[in-house]
Amino acid sequence: MTHDDVRAWLAGYERAWRSPGTDGLAGLFTDDATYSPSPWREPVRGLPALASWWEGERDGPDEEFTAGYRVLAVDGAVAVVRAEVDYASAEGNHGRWRDLWVLEFADDGRVRSFEEWPFAPDQRDGHED
Image (cartoon, rainbow, N blue to C red; front, side, top):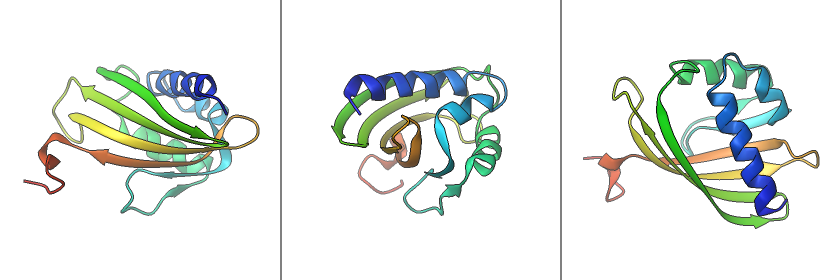
């Protein structure tokens, strides 16, 4: 993988988040992919479970947010990305987030393992206020 490959994947990820349904996930994740939304949660396993989780996590394709991504490192098939996301709505699980994402890619350019390290503003010192 190259930095450009990872940036292209990130563009596809955001496009899928902003699109109706979950059909775009098959082009981003392997059939047996694991997705860890937190280092403290059990990963979501497999594309069907990921699709269900994906729909439950967003308000829908018209959800308003801004996002920025910076590829911090690429080492073979593994990439580390800093993501910053600001959701327009402060309801539910929305708000402002800075994340580190650890992505492991398969040979075909799809992700086989996605691990999130989310951090919210109320966790400024590493502890929730």
